[in-house]
Every structure is written in structure tokens, then in C-alpha cells.
Image (cartoon, rainbow over the protein chains, first blue to last red):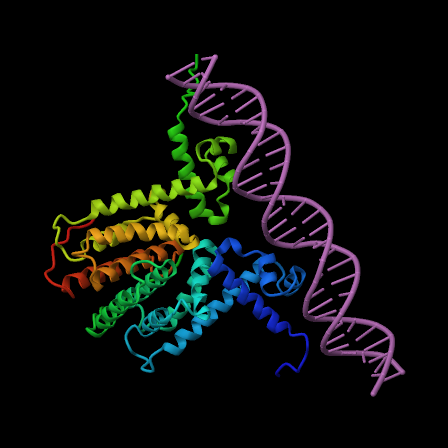
Length: 199
Length: 199
DNA sequence: GCAAAAAAACCGTCTGGACGGTATGTTTTG
DNA sequence: CAAAACATACCGTCCAGACGGTTTTTTTGC
């Protein structure tokens, strides 16, 4: 069902809108995300934008969805084949975050996520939903302290990257990752505890 | 007769303004931080607010300063007496973050910091400045992978707290902290040090 | 095939409201 | 009384969204 050749390509426009919205947020800050800016960047009129996304929220929702899907896919791909590997999911999570190169626009999407998470409780909740779903799926391997710590460190890394903190230098990052890998290898495994997360 | 306690107390007003600004950000999101909202919450007029803080930026700057100072003091207090303890600063950093109880308004300030960090490169830079200054002061103990990891995990914990993620439940947090303490004790580095029950 | 009709894609303008900031009072304090 | 500490009224700007029109694409009727 590929799109037949046509002059009009609404799907591409939609994609461009999302893309431009992400770029605006990352490069110019959340306050730069106005319908007019997005429309201009994407070379459409505001009317055109509103035709595809019925309101600013719809646009942001689309962007959020897109980013989460992307991250989800990345993590999925980074999963070890061995299904019972300890902290399997969390290790993949960390690997994806660690592999992000902020100079590649495509990979800056995570920054978008971060910004949205911290600015709006609504997206916080949706993100937590995703994490908890994945955690539930990998309950056998990823409810350990090690797993939690790996994910926490990943989040920290990610935040550090965003702000260009002192721990985001390549050397520091390499050190940290080596440390975490080692940590994992020495097998600091403990009993996992059943408990509900939640808000 | 009834001494109208018209007691003018500009300092208290200023403090109230900062306090309300923080509350608004944490509870209702960054977008809720408007001069009108802050003024209303603090029971002053907008003119009154602008008398004390000449513009929105001044208010935010004041808030930022206040939060950083608070955190700085907390970390200072959490420092182990033993000056050569490995990751001394980073451990204190983690301890402070871990001790934060989001249900206590006073301690939700850090969330403010986080939000500001992620939303504005300017505050990012100022925060990095603080971290790097401290890191330099504790260069002998806190440039190790362990130290970096502890701080990264602290940042993750802190972000998780903000969003109420699955790793912010008391039990999960206890696990993680125990794990990190243990991590520290088994020491990737040199001699360990006695750690007292923080706070 | 091929118009005519319908639908989708897209544009430019307008408006109402929110918000930061100013200008100008009015009260309190020293 | 003068300065500081407030309040009230108002202005300019920006922005989300509405609205009506125009062009392009698809569907329908014959």
C-alpha cells in the first residue's frame, strides 16, 4: 500500500511537522514551540498545520508518541538474545541512552522527551506507563536493585547530556560505562522484591 | 484598638514570592509560572511583585539562587568528616537527593531546579558551574567512576521522584540505596569508610 | 473515459485572551 | 516628608485557534 505518486504528500508533511517541532524544542527551547514557528519551519501555513493536527496538544502528542516509539524500538533492538540475562531490559535501556550522539539530530529526540517529561505531569504519567509496562514484561529480570540502578544512571547520563554537564565528556562517559559494565559483570545480584510502583 | 498588624515585612513577602513560584512550578508545571499567578498565590498584587523583582527573569533568578544555595548547604552538611573518603562529595550529593521527601514542600525545591535545568540552557550552565566548582574542590576524591556513577544515579533518582516513576516508591528507593551503599563498600576503589546513617 | 461532485489538503486573516511590563496612584514606614 | 511598599489601571505583543476561501486529489455518475 505504498503511496501512489502524487504531488500532495500529507504523510510527509505530517512527518515534517513533527520533525520540525522536535528540532525547535531541542535547539531553541520549549518556548519556541509555537504553531507559527513549526508551520514556518515545515514550510506550511498555520492553517495547514491545524488541518493535520487539531490543536497544539495534538501536535505535541504526536511528537511524544513518535519519540517514545523510537526509543522503544531502539531498546528492543538492544535487548540481549539471552532472555534470562539479569537486568536485560535495563541494560538495553542504558545502552541506548549511552549510544546517543547529541550531534546527530535524529538522536536528539530523547532530549525532547526529557523536556516534555519535566515540563508536564501528563507526559510524565504516560512515560511512567511505558516504563512500567516494559518492567512488567521483564519482571523476571529487571526488578533487581542492579537493574534499577542501571536505569537510574542512564537517566542521569541522559540529563547530563542534555545540559552538557561535567559527566558528559567522552572520557567521563567511557569511564562510567566501563564501571557500570563491570558492575554488572561482578554480578551484584540480589533478591528481587515484588512491589508496586505507581504514582 | 486592634493593632492592625500592618507590619510591613518586605523580606517575608519576597520569601513568599519565591516560595509560591516554586510551588507553582512543581505542582502545576512551568507554564503555570506567570506573574499573575505568583502574585495571587503570594497575596500581593502584580505591581507588588514587580516592585520586589524587576521582571520575571529576576524572580526566576532569585528562585534558582535560592534553590542552589539550599542544596549546597544540604550537601555541605551531609559531607563525611573524613576528608579523604572516596567519593566523599558525590556520596553526600546522593544522600541529600535520597533524603528528599517530595511530600514536604520545603524539599520539593530540587524539583524546581530540575525543571529549570532542563528547560533553559542558561540555568544549565549555571548549574554545571556549581557542580564543576565542587568537583574541583573535591578533585582528590570525586573524579572516580564510582563518584560519577553515584551522582548520575542521584540525578536519575531525582528525576524519577519528579515524575513519580516506578523507581520512586519507598521500597524501590531503599533497595537502590542499599545497593549503592554496598557498591561503595565493596569498593571499586581503595579503602572504604564508615558511613553513618544519613539524616 | 470523463466530467461533475465530494473530499482532503492547504492558505491567509482575524480575534480574543493571556501575559509581561509600564505608568501612576495610594498607603505604610522611618 | 521622603522613600519604600504596595495597589490599580492600562498597553503592546504574542499566540492558539477559528474561519472562510483556494487548490489539489479522489470518488462518483453516466
